[in-house]
Amino acid sequence: MDELRQIIHIDMDAFYASIEQRDNPKLRGKPVAVGGDPKGRGVVMTCSYEARKYGIHSAMPAKKALTLCPQVVFVRPRFYVYIEISNHIKEIFYQYTDLVQPMSLDEAYLDITEISNDFTSAKLIAEEILFEIYKQTKLTASAGISFNKFLAKVGSDYNKPNGLTLITPENADEFIDRLPIGKFFGVGKVTEKKMIELGIHTGADLKNFGLKNLKRHFGKSGEYFYNCAIGIDARTVSSHWSRKSLGMQRTLGKDIDNKEEIISFLEKIALKIEEHLKDKKLKGKTITLKVRYYNFHTLTRSITLKEAVDNGKIIIENIKKLLDKTEVGKKKVRLLGITISNFIRNQYGVKYKQSMLKI
Ligand code: TTP
Ligand code: MG
Image 1 (spheres, rainbow, N blue to C red):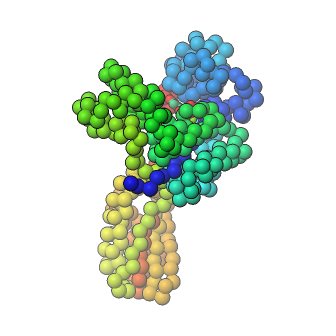
Image 2 (cartoon, protein in one colour):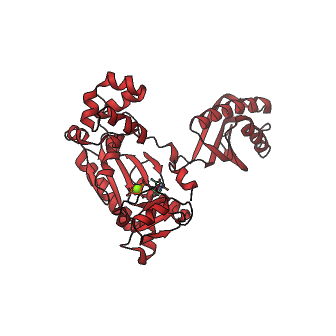
Image 3 (cartoon, rainbow, N blue to C red):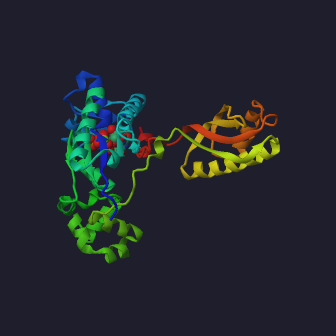
């Protein structure tokens, strides 16, 4: 069996709404909804826990929220503040590990296997992170700690707000068995309805339905659901969202001063980089050339483009311009490298675009 991992999932509580309450004392303790205009066709992006008591929730038409709770205070979103805080909490996460996978502005997985001995210390680390978040931002978050991503996420949702839930291999079965089917990873509204029609209401029902039947009804996802039901989720915490640059460098077989040979060597690197960028769905604006001469003297030359690129041909065109700012062709070279940075990307993996567009 693979080594047991220790994964924390952290999710801020009523993120946008808590920030608005933090920044405006008049909103504290009140039902607050962040989103579009209740007079128009706006939707609720999120609401405070006080508003949730009235049945208000994310993606609900603002008009309906007002009917449920006439005294609800509507606030327009301030994305720049949310992004700033999102970056701040990420900085806190990176103080513990590099293995951070942000899933949206307010949510991330951390793999702390390397820095934690067991689940007792994992829980202490999670507590410390929640404490740091509160100390530095005056906002609360919830955490789930477990041995896979699915259970860590279920855990962070279990005791919200300001809660912490540890799901160990010992208590996982009990936990999963009781879990409503809608809480399983990948089960959205449509799948949930189908599951309920099949008599599957909980994790226990899911397990009892059996792998074969699940595959028959849900195809490949059926296998995934079954694995979750028996506590298996092999997805790793992948930290490439946080990557600041992507580069590659190679030492030449022998020192060269022929410029054409050097360009063709760099072309190969650029194509490889294109492959990696596309694979990781990244595009960068800054292209950097690195040259190490025969005498180990090393320099870099960079160019920043108006538009982000992932195309090897454009990269090499710019690399040629950068080569003119070096002594390549005159002085022998032993190593060459290209790095792309200054990424634009769906860096927060924002999942809620639809309702964001509707405000
Ligand atoms: P969530 O973490 O789902 O919600 P939340 O943080 O407001 O509340 P909690 O986690 O305590 O249940 O989403 C994070 C933010 O993303 C949320 O504050 C607002 C935004 N969002 C939308 O814009 N539209 C949506 O449909 C959802 C679900 C969230
Ligand atoms: Mg949240």
